[in-house]
Image (tube, rainbow, N blue to C red; front, top):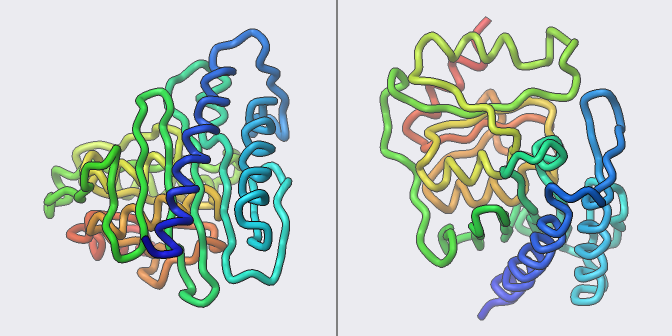
Length: 263
């Protein structure tokens, strides 16, 4: 087993254990909800999950950097950076909607990209994972993107940023460009699981603005290893630190770029 595969085995184990933490607080009266803003929720379970994940990473890989959503990470000079979302789709979780996940992606400064990652959906017991160059899998079975090449019958997914009242950046313009010419759009509330849905062939394409690195790091690699394409809106190289993403089954990618970049 290579060093990266060994790291990913740890990623998978950590994701599964963090998923148990999420389920312990799901639809529980003991879960405490607070607000970063009117549209951005956080719970005590987010924080408990992140504390566990960051501690587990530090115990196993003492020198690696960690960038985590709730701010408990650390920066080092290591080659490897862990992007941690301890609870993606907190709004779903807080409202009792069974669609949320743990997402962890590992970036290599030498490779200049995500080299491994996992996304765990504890409600459906689905563990999505990938190692660069080794394929993408869900519960041990290979993932493959869809074969849809006609936008007219494409099922897409997207999400809306917290800045709902910012009409220039709230994704409504892009949404309205896509909607008339496709089968339909799903808005499910988890960027990481939307990306995994592209990898699994359940969704044909996905785009979203104003995301954070921990939202997309793991899912981006899972899509690519399943045969899909992941870029910025204009087709340039995906960057986990850049706040937008376009992912597709590859067959629809050029058309989606055209739609996203049209005026």
